[in-house]
Image 1 (tube, rainbow, N blue to C red):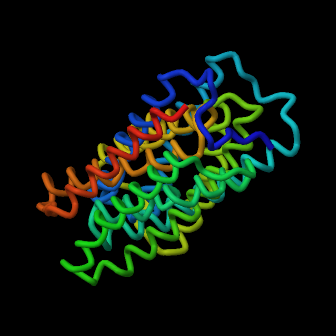
Image 2: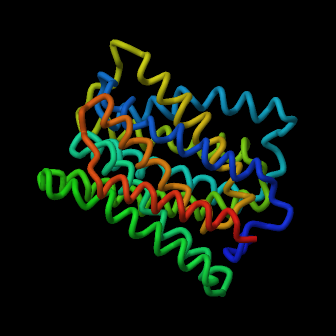
Image 3: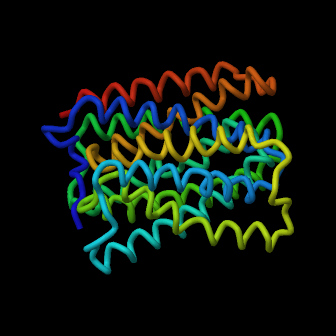
Length: 293
């Protein structure tokens, strides 16, 4: 398995990969808002996110000249596992979104912030440098501050937070499988095939929960598919093959920062001084890992 060294991004990794991972997380941060706006069940909205995006992703992959021939059997299995993990991630995350704040849903849903960099260090059999250790510590402290005040405001968020935490673990597994696939496969074909593998599990889960499947208003679901799956995940999978797990992991904290801002503006989920300090710590951590070569 090819793993980008967590010691730094590869020497030739272009700046556009770093910009891509930041733009990806900004786009993905709007996902919880679209889920709240959708008039289907939460898992059904995840199904439509995948189903509406799949044809576009396939067309984009084919437009690059890629064809689904000659793929190794192991690669099909890896992408299928990635798709199932992503389906389980979306199902648990979308259920949790409706039971907690936008900031908490996004923060816990991206607990891969810590898990994925640790996986990267273990896979590369190395230890973080001093700057990387400081960046990871700052990111952790920022995450704690971002989530801490929410518990004080409303402990009823615990159930939703736990669902989102489970989603974060599953998201990490998705990243691991996709990192393996990206070692031999371009980003668009890898994303298109894993997306297809997510469709059936999400539909079956939504039906099993008795959710409303067909929406009355398609706007939020189209926005969810384009912003989160096509644009957000597309840029994320592109960056995943070019940046270290540490950079990708810490960059995930951009999502709760943006989601907290959306929650404040739209739902009056106000931010306090600890939240703002947490945002500042995350920003410093991102600067540190960007400067580390």
